[in-house]
Image (cartoon, rainbow, N blue to C red):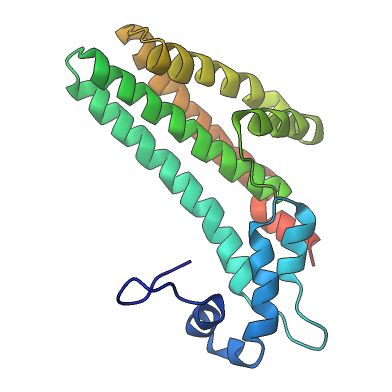
Length: 207
């Protein structure tokens, strides 16, 4: 929820009217459906995209959904760049290297969330849910299976998050290799979304 001057939260209905003046005639009823955007199910997203009986659909929920995926991908690149910068400036300092590894792992998480949400409408809430979702995507999409995203996600989790950050295994050569692997992962996620239609495919099916 956005906040107005003074820190007070902006009601969703007002945000709808501000983003789309046409929403004034249906903001209250439709915004109840927009809240379903946060639901962790395809049914929730479909509800958000469908207007109340007799009302025209608003672009707000669609724009929010697309914005969510774009923001996640942008965050993935931002975390990776921060990880590369911190690693290059670390001079081998264990704490800085471990922080860089964790930022690189977070880049993988952001890209994975973007992919899963774009193709399923589900927002994973744990490492386990992401792993299961990737397994299911590999069953449904040949491209995901070909890229081996689930196995790559698990390896990044093990090396960057588990060994480097938590266990303190500071292998500079290994971290440098992992940073390259993370970049490849993000690029492959973006390529897969273009290949299968990504969020636009989901939104069209939800109509």
